[in-house]
Structure formats: structure tokens, C-alpha cells
Length: 127
Image 1 (cartoon, rainbow, N blue to C red):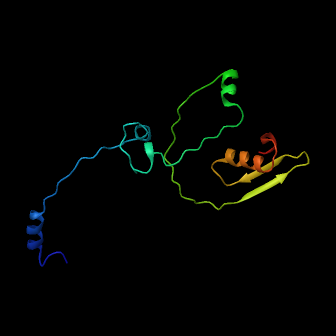
Image 2: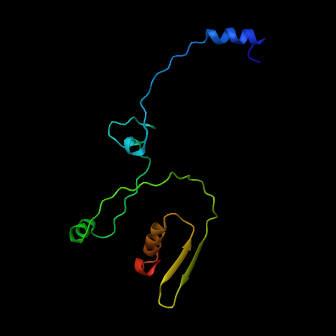
Image 3: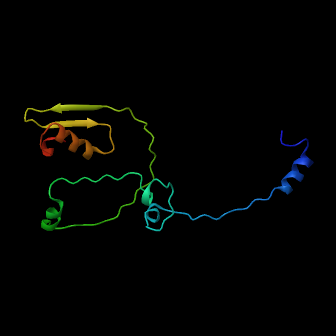
């Protein structure tokens, strides 16, 4: 119970004074990465909680020798990180030594690369 009756509650509401402090805001992920963006969590510099950098081979040489290099920005719908599917993997080696994996993952290329490294086999033989 907040008050003995409605009238007392209304009188108490009139005594409440609220002060608002306007804080800086971020409306999208690109703005959140700007050098001057307000930090959402102080422990994550530039509002990045994790970065993954993978390079296989001589990346600079690959770009230099490439017939075409494209730099694009892609946008996708927002996603929810809930794990709604069961986790399982099925593997099959064929008579030519090719490994085929069926796995419930959103990053099949990471799985392909990691399995190829662990099994010490060329990625072309691991799909």
C-alpha cells in the first residue's frame, strides 16, 4: 500500500520532483564504433566486446595479385542469439578421402577451417 487513500496518493505525487539528465545516445552500430561515441560498457573500448581476425596464407599478396578486389557493406535483419536448435554434427569420409560434415552452426566456414587444421588436411577436402 502506497497511501491510505487515493487523495493522499495524489498529494504525494505532487511533492515528487524529477530531474532528468540528457545522456548521449547511439542509434546504430556504425555510430557506436566512432572514436567519439559514448561507451555503452566502459570495459569494452570502442563498444566492441569481441573481435575475430582470421588470416590464412599471405593476405597482402593475395590482394595484390587478385584480378578484382571488392569492398562492400552489407546490412541484414537483426538477429536473436537464442539457441533454439539442438547441437549435433554428422561426418562422412568418402573413398577419395573427402570429409563431408553436416553441422548445426551459423559459421560453417569456421568449422571447416578448424576441422581441416585439427585433422591436418587441405580445406578443399573438408566441406
